[in-house]
Image (cartoon, rainbow, N blue to C red; front, top):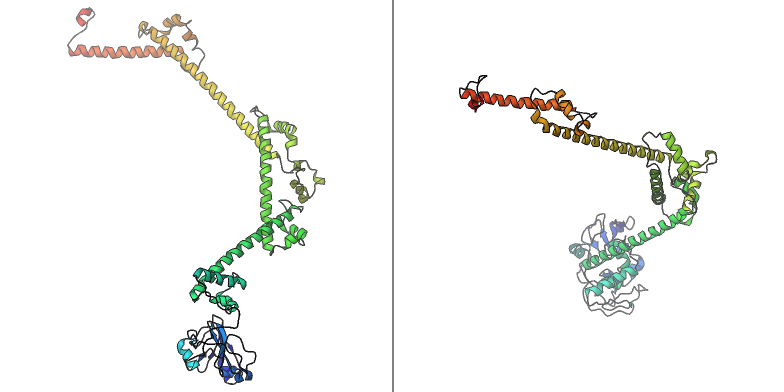
Length: 472
């Protein structure tokens, strides 16, 4: 804190008054660089110069000393030039640890011991009074907890708030006896910090509670206004600018935020109900189109759906555009349980979406049916081929590489394995017969090659008249 220059163009202009952190005033001479707790004579009034009373301080608490009677008192004398009944003084010296030290800058500082000695002259000080006429005498506490409780109670009595600084608090309570319930300055500062933290938390909770109350009242006000999710804040401001709940909100920004929160809650509430109603309508319409043919056209299906579910369409779709009410008035009735939500139900897009899903399901079912049928035919044809192949294996001993289909056909033309093969895709019975003859030819060719190789290895020559016994 800046000092204040006192006086005019005389020597008093060199003196500047400051205040220490504990609230005590001291003085600094810019010419002599002297700092003192005592008010210089240049700054005193004539009455102060003639007075026999001198003012001092102990632990930030002022007391007065009579230079004639050599007595001290805690009470300010009413008549500066006349001594009052003195208090008994123990003769103890003044606490000299608080004397200002050097020239202060832009902040107040306490003087050091060296500057104090230079400014005050002799080190002996008037004795500090041991008793007081003030009924609020200092109380000695047995425990640190009791002392801190007394200190905190003192702060409460002086209505110290959470935004107070240590210096501001000190100026308000320094003369209270309970300020000295805690002996040291660190103990006082720590207790003050704990008190400020608790007060700030309490004030914050009170602020939150007040905000909740304002929010509840503001929402109750909005419930009475003809608004919907399409309403904008300027209209609300126009309708409710004189209402108590509206004016209780401190700023327009907070009102806009609360209004946005209200609209969000309204949308969530309406959206949940609309989704529930729409889901039920969609289920009903889907079941109705469950047996839809893949050849069904949208124009035909739309007429059937409108005829069946016309009462479940959105009421807003049935309004006459020439007689349509303002949107706010229309939606205001939604909050009345006896009215119908204009957007609750099915829209034309919902019907189209239901049709598309129904067609997709019908096509999928048709595709599955065709695939199942194809698989069934394939299995039947495979079983018929297996049966005919078994029939060929039964007659393979009768075949020779020169056997023809015309020779074999009369034997099987009435056999079931042959008739079930007729008309189906894939290999025909005749093709399967020739496959069997070809396999027989390959087998006989391989056996002939093996026989010729064996004969060559044994230098055996086969002739037309060679007996079979010689070959074996």
